[in-house]
Structures are given as structure tokens and as C-alpha cells.
Amino acid sequence: MWPPVFSMIVAGVLCVFPAVVSADSEIKLYKQVGDDVVLNSGCGNIMEISWKNGVNIAIEWDGTNIDSYGHFEVRGALNTATGEMTLRELTLNDSGLYTAEMKEVACKYPTRLIVILPVPKPTVSKTCDEEMTKCTLTCDAIITNAEPVEYVWNSDHSVTTPVINITKDESSSTFECWLNNPVSQQHSKPFPNPFTRKVNMSAGLTVLIVLLVAVILTAIIHRIKAGMWFFEKASMPWEADFWRKHERPQTDAAESNGTAAQEGSAEEGTPMKPNDEA
Image (tube, rainbow, N blue to C red; front, side, top):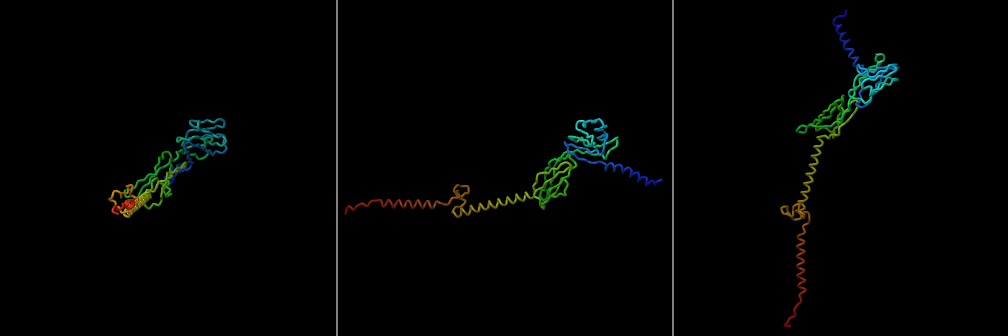
């Protein structure tokens, strides 16, 4: 008789072994909602066949007639030559364990059909600390009934979580989040690096200030050369004559020359009266 300890070990192995075999004996097959699926029976030459969904018969053929049950009557079909069962326009409720049998004996390992939704297009959101030294980027998406889903970031393909943390040292200019599941793939729009954006805005502001200072200095130099100061009304930049040359002295000189010329002409045009005594 086996020792009690050894008996317990054997009993434990016998309990665990069926569970391991059962877990390894399923063939997982992922399909997308709305697709069609063809399940291979693996029965070889068939004279009859029965497909079960769980413990319920879905479609059976006795060698003469084909009988379908439930929604398999509308969306199911059986190939009597190969034993393959086709199920069209899959829904989430079609997920389950499918087994092909001949004379109530399974032909091969059952197929675990898993019907899921395609992944949605994700978006990227950010939260940063007040000092803007680090930010957290989150890949946002509703993935209900789309599992299993894998997250991948373009900046670091080793990151497979919906959240990544970045700092000022991050060199990537944009970030993209990819969602993958066994039937589909989607990625977000490029999300700009929040630290790069801040640097660019600061650089643009610096350039604007430099240009503004240059314009003001140019205006001051121009008015100094023109002999006018900024406390005079005409010397304000928004005045119409601000950028015109200072022409007033030339006008005054012209007017003065014109007056002198007129006086000279008047003197030349006055006739000399004859001397009466002569």
C-alpha cells in the first residue's frame, strides 16, 4: 500500500492534470463582429457529423438530412464533404466552445471562438506638474468588448501600458499611441511634445520682442536726424507726417526767395521820372 504522503501527491496530480489538458486542448480563434467564420472539423472522411456549441447541438447531418437549430438555422451552414461549419455575420453572443463529433466522439480539439469588436481610434491627453518638469500622457479609448488590447507608444515600443511619463529630456517631437487586438489596429493623431511646444513659443516671443525694439530704435534715430523730438505732436509714429522728410525750412526759403524776386522785379519795372528842372 502506498504511503499516505505519496497517495496525496498522486491524487493532487490527477486532479490537476485534467485541468491542464483541458486548458491546452482548446484552439482559440479570434474573429471580428460582423465577419464570417469557417470552423474546420478535422474529422477526415465523414459519413455523418454533429457540431455543438457548448453542450447544445448547432448543426447535425445524419448522412441524409441537415438539421440546424436556433440562430444557426439562419446564419449557419454545413459542408457535408469536408465537415466544415460556416457561421455568418458574427455577433458577440456567438462566442463559445465549438466541437465537431462523429458518432458522439470528438474529431479533434474543440475551437474556442472569441468574437470581439475592433479597437476604436484612441486619443492622447496630458497632465503636467505646475513646474512643467514632467508630464503624463494617457492613451484614451473605450475598449469594452475589444479585449485583449495591447498599447504601444511610438516613442518607446517597449512601453505597453496606456500611460507614459515624459520629461524635458524627451527628444520626440510628437507622440502616437497604437491600439492592437487580434482582429484590428488603430493609432491616435500625432500629439505634440508639450515641452517642445513651450520652447517654440518662447523663441517666437523673443523674436517678436527683438523686432519691436529694432523698429522703435529705427524710429528714434530717424526723428533725431530730422530734428524733431517725440514730445512734438508731429513726431508721433501714428501721425501721417512722421516718416516724411522735414521740408519746412526749404519751403520757407522758397517763399523768402520768391518775395525778394518780386521786390526786385517791382523796382526794375518802375519807370524813372524825368527831372522837371532839367
